[in-house]
Length: 226
Length: 358
Image (cartoon, rainbow over all chains, first blue to last red):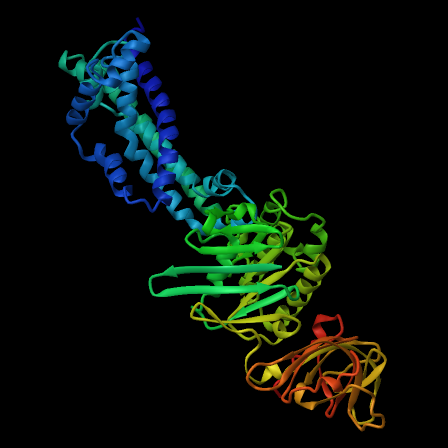
């Protein structure tokens, strides 16, 4: 047992892991969306934005179905790990990544679009291969987008509630995150614990956003040479 | 040598160009804006993936749509200098200049100091790109492109943001660099620039087509040769020497004995003779060698290409030349009127920006 505040540990583990997973998926996806002229682009854009508008219960419900061993993903997971994806940490991690995707893809896509073709074309005619041009030109020019995406992805993972409740239940030290812990504490009239967790989350979120804006302001000044 | 047969289509615009550029180092694409000049450079650089056709540069195939071949821009040793410079805003000037060096695919031996000196970049190295003037940006962009050691340099209105004195100087130094390193250059210019005219091949582009292969208007009746000032004539004319022969020339700016100059001749002033008639009263005379004689279809005339110590020129003769007249390749050239000095020496500040059309 992790003790009374096992949910803090689960939440942090979930937030770091999902931020990493989000960046791995969202960077290529946002790059593709920013540069493609493919006809299916609007479909992909709509799909990635869907978690933003769907009630978490709807989103969580479908994931729960998808994770059940009757479906390929769920049965594959059972075969490989011997346990079900639903009500596991891996399950809530996957759910969190999918649910936070729009918060990470959109700032990255905007940043990549504002880098524009011009600088990348210049890099290419100077001999930079596409991956090299991406690393040496697109990433530094889009760094505000990267920071915004990572912070939003992390913060949204910390605040995840509905989807985790649907997919992961409320299993102490495995799927019980802070938001669910607060809910449970209030239900059991443990207001002291609810206060501590809520205040902690509030302060943490504020500091995260504050540092984001401070760092962004510094970068903007530098890029404009002021 | 560059061989291209390219086409591209946008809504309301179509470009079709089939050319073989094998002449000098410099080619100038000129024509009104929207004619397709920049698009042409973009196609050569490999930035227009929708372009169709073939591009052959020396023995490299850059594009051959028929065989589904398209070499991406980073594998073509062509560097494009964009009109707006497109410097990387997250790097300072020195880092921008260095960007191409480590990634150069072509030749080596283009020296940092040489480029920085020629383009006067030393004072800018530590500056951020955001507070450079338009002209400074263009100089950095040209330097960055040259340091990438291209085998073909593509310049899209590279001097448009420079004031005229600076422009002459930079163009002069740029020409020095491309001559020293033998880098073929294609310029795009919407103005039929006085200085670009000298020593370059022109392609006149309009609505996506090549409509002329020479400079337009009266000016194509003139050509330039290099000469050296050998003395002063009492009338105020300069006496210039081409291969030991003397040519009088009007010099709008003071010249000194020993100066290297570019002389502009009007073809209508010239009289040619296959053997020296002797005792000709002319403002100038020099000897040349006939390189080729080509009958011009339709007009009944012929076009001769003549080389001499000062360079090469071609002249149109309105009457068909009886072959018997051509005794040998040597030819004597007389100019009825003095030539004009258009560029003085190797000092860019002494360019006599003369209107060659008078």
